[in-house]
Length: 130
Image (cartoon, rainbow, N blue to C red; front, side, top):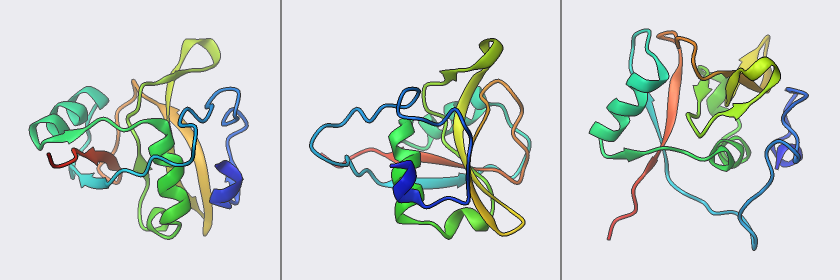
């Protein structure tokens, strides 16, 4: 999925060992809703607000599929996907983020426990209609 995203840079820890594809039989495409909180915010606050808006927590595959399907959206502003964090080096909890740097599309990891700036948008999942 990372190769299909055709990124100019990918964090070296974003591998199939760390982020294995869990959906056999092809992509599980879900509707991603981008939310802009317009202020500095923690992951816990963003998740609580998303729940209040009726949105669900993404999985890391949602970030990867979004990057494949909408490559230009990340050039506008960074997009954070608050999936269950991957525990990286020194116990830091990270999540996938899409952004641009000097015109290059990048797929990286950012600290789940850090503050997010007003520039960040968040990718959440719209609940399917029953």
